[in-house]
Image (tube, rainbow over all chains, first blue to last red; front, top):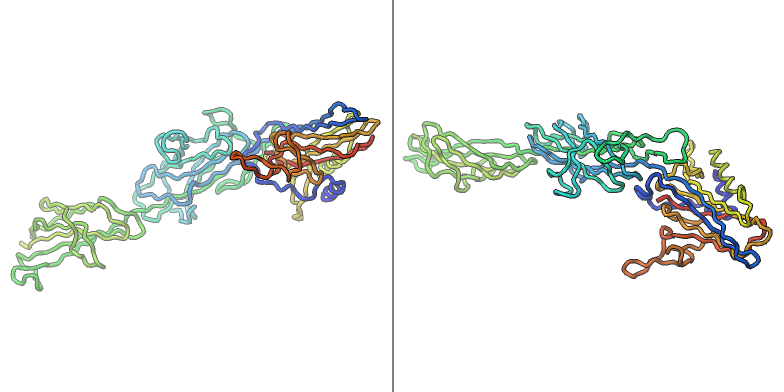
Amino acid sequence: MTSKLTYMGSIGLAAITCVTATPALAAGTTAGSSITNTATVDFQVGGVSQTQQSASDSFVVDRKIDLTVEEDGTATTEVVPGQSNAVTTFLLTNNSNEVLDFALAATQITGGTAKHLGTDSFNATNVRIYRDNAVTGTVGSFDPGDALVTYADEVPVDTPVRLFVVADIPGGLATGAVAGIQLRATAREGGTASSQGAAVSQTSGANTAGKDTVFADIAGVNDGARDAAHSAADDYTVKTATLTVTKTSRVVDDPLNGASNPKLIPGATVEYCIAIANAAGGAAATSVAISDSVPGQLTFVAGSIKLNGTVTGSTCNADGGAGGSYAAPVVSGTIATIAAGQTRTLVFQTKVN
Amino acid sequence: MRSALLLAFAALLPGQALAADQIALDNSVFVERVKTDAAGKQRILLEEPKVVVPGDKLVFVLNYRNAGARAADRFVITNPLPAAVRFADAGDTQPLVSVDGGHAWGRLADLTITLADGTRRAAQPADVTHIRWAFQKPIPAGASGKLMFRGIVK
């Protein structure tokens, strides 16, 4: 075949260099349109202009089926156990040269490495797909105006469609648990709004002069190349608060020794410290409610509650601010937020009966 | 492969199947494909435009022949570019091109495009709207030749 090129070059008509194609337009000329090239010749014979001659050639542009599904963003979706409507976002782009429908399938992986390198360890439930309403509501974010779909209807060329895979997260999961999600889109015939078109098939056998169909898509995470489908992965990662509670007590003073080496005798003051530790690496815990019953042998010291205090190492600093309440025999208090890696305390005093 | 070869030769035989007019003009188009054979060698094939999708490279071939008895003078071939085709190059056939719908003509390197803000930039192959070959010398009776250009399906 090189000989042909040389031949063409030798008669001075073709450069040997290949056409340096600038990146082809993703979608381009609509399938089925006809391209007609017409050349005309103007000339004179013996100084007299002659009738213009022309010649045409035409062919039909075929249908190229190409699409991409990709994760929108580069991070996992952080979820908490028991969360409803946890959202992962994908972009579907129709790179074909025709408006098409796309069948959608959201699946979950079982074990193995999820998109963001975690190991899949659980399955989300109630997995649904929504198509972003690009006109109303919060465009680009999941909101009630988005439509629950099983296929993407009449997807225009070259315009990414945002799809939300929405799922519920089971309770009782630990920080770091991962659920891998995959979304696959498969081209279907377009042209009829509000109904999913038939499957698209590639023109087999001999080429025809009419509009043929050629699959041009690349392989995705769960589909092959040139199968009119593409797929991408994302995942949910659980980030929760892991709280541990430690209760300590110390004798603050007694009626005889005062604060100097007090002993646990009747009338002595005993200080309790309830320390709530939130493990590092998780999420902040909010509205942490603490309650503790005062034993019958002790009497609560009114106004002695200190809330939201700190610890140093494992030593309770017995600090904190006002707050909490006492409703005999229960001391209670609520700490607004305990960040991951922090420890906060509730401290109160009692007297030995 | 064989058919592509035959096609190529058909394109190289000027005047074949041309009308017996004063000037015969024949216009054909091929799709240029690069195929890698079993040995990993890349081969360029020219195929009939049966499967054509956006991004495909096209080779347009114009064959002309002076079928008359006398020389043809002021011989000008004009080829408006189809709207769905982006011009790439014309090999070494050195055509004049127009980037404004056929009003002004020149070598691509000499043409400019006026931008919205009034400034001008050099014309690019993608700006070409028309291609023209104007022959300096008369085409003698019976003489023939071939011109080509390449484009890309938008």
